[in-house]
Image (cartoon, rainbow, N blue to C red; front, top):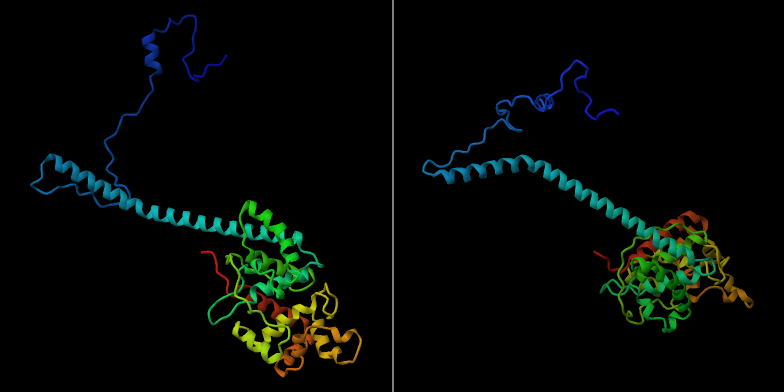
Length: 334
């Protein structure tokens, strides 16, 4: 068996037994003679001045020299410590950003599981009734999840079903990390538009819930004419163009503006036709009074024609107006 010592003197019959002392001498490690202490300075050509005040005794001299050496070592290491600190902070920021992206996608995935074309109109209506309470003058209302506490109001009739649909997604999400109703509703509305063929809308997350109902009487009434609608929307921070674009959400939901599950520009094309003008028949039931009023206003009519002729422009304007709507009055996590 080969010894772990790879080099030993060979044995032969003529050789005398190796004494223990001579063996120890042979196996004694050959350590090079220590040279004199190095005089090469460490990262500096400036010698450390350990000279204490002239009147200091020996103990003071020792302490003084120790402090000077510690000061030197710290000053030499400081740049590396700063670089290390910046690297760690950068890593933390990057990790937090990846976590946020992962969390956002998880919320969207759970919402997609419960959103269908048939459910889409109710979920989109839920967005408008939560965010539509916003008013600029006192920064009240808005996208704050208060709709959960307002479901018994007459204007919110039928929305309990939509809330129940989202409760399924929220119960699963809350097991891992709580999500606000405001965020959940905003995402659900965007997914409702997308699943019906409308634009893909990237919704920022991080809203806080109010936890109580908003004041009553903040939503636009269905009976308003164009002048009244423009006044109400102006108080909420929306221009006429944005009012018309957001009204295009009625293209889904069975109000007579094309297919109830297809998000397109059929709403505007039918507004230009004014089918309710004909006497009798079901055409008189198309849309709400507020929908019909838009077609009788010159300023609104300009954008109705634009969107009827160019669906891409409508999609872009709706996307921008929707993001503005779901950010209105929102309080954000810090």
